[in-house]
Structures are given as C-alpha cells and as structure tokens.
Image (cartoon, rainbow, N blue to C red):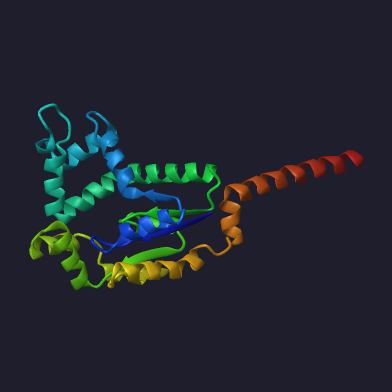
Length: 236
C-alpha cells in the first residue's frame, strides 16, 4: 500500500490539490475533517482530552455548562503560536488515531494508494508514515496576497497566521515532490498531471506486502509452508 503525504501552508492551494486527487479517483484522508470530529468527541466535558486541555489552559476556557468554549480557546491559540503548539500536542494522539483508523478502513477495502491530506504532516511526525511526500508551495508574497484576498484580512493579521506555521520553504526542503502553485489554476492542473505518473507507478515490493492483497498472499504462503512441512514430516 502506498500512502502519499500531502501538505502545504495556509493559502498555498493544498486543498485544491487534494480535490484534484479526489476528482481523479484517489481516496483522501483529510486530517482537518478528522480533527473537527475529534474536537467534538475529545473535548466533551469530563473526557480525558477535556481534562488535559482544561489543565493546560485553565477554567477560563469553559462555558457556564462546563463545556469547552471553542471560541475562547480559538482566540487564545490563534493569537499565541506557543499555545497553539501546546493544543496541537495535546490533541495530536487523538487525531493520529483517527487518521490511522481511516487508513485502516481503506486498507480493508483493498485501496492500494491513499492520500493523507495533513497540514501538520511534519510537525506531527506523520511524514514517517508516507512516501512520497508532496508539498504544495508558493512564494511568501503570493501566499500573503492570496490569504489577504481570500479571508479579507489585513496584511498584519495574514502575516501573523502565516508565521504561526512551519515556513513553506522548510517544508519544500523536506518534500519528495514539490508542486509550484505560483501560477494560475490552469498551471496547477498541468503541474498536477505531471506528478500522476510518479504517484501511480507500480507498487514496490515493500508497498505490495503492506497492501491487503500482499497480506493475503503472505498469509497463504505461510500456511502453505506449514502444511508442506507437516506433510514432509509425516513421510519421515
């Protein structure tokens, strides 16, 4: 099984590339979607995640009913990068479990190529699970202008949000494949087409043995070997 890591930065066009994968029939595990559902479950009053977050951020983040006030928590973490990193560390195990569960379900279905769409791929050390790693990259000025235009925010606010993430140039240096998205949507489509041959090449032997079919073949081979040994011993 081949697990492709897809990441980028805010306003880099990662979500557009993720949608292109979906449009071409690739199953995509979206970490943002999983995180939203995880937040709902993990932050329920009295849960283990709830206790960790309250211990880290204090009772001020709680609403009158004792539930986490997500608006208050969001305001804290988006204005303080260190607090955002702390929240990510607290919730990362839960989100990672959700991602692995989705991958497992796709493995059960027999999917040989899966795309992990994870904004914090490197920060959460999920890059070790993926190969190849694709980074959607834009230059800093383009990223800033697109974010300001998309969210109708000031240059300072947009820059603060960009600065809260790992720099795209650093992510680019860690990538196996870089998709340059400084151009138009048509340019992005062309760049995407160029990488399809690479990500759809035949599975390596390691990837094959990790696939459902490879596992079935391995199990059959093991049992065949055991039966063969029993028959051989019976003749002795």
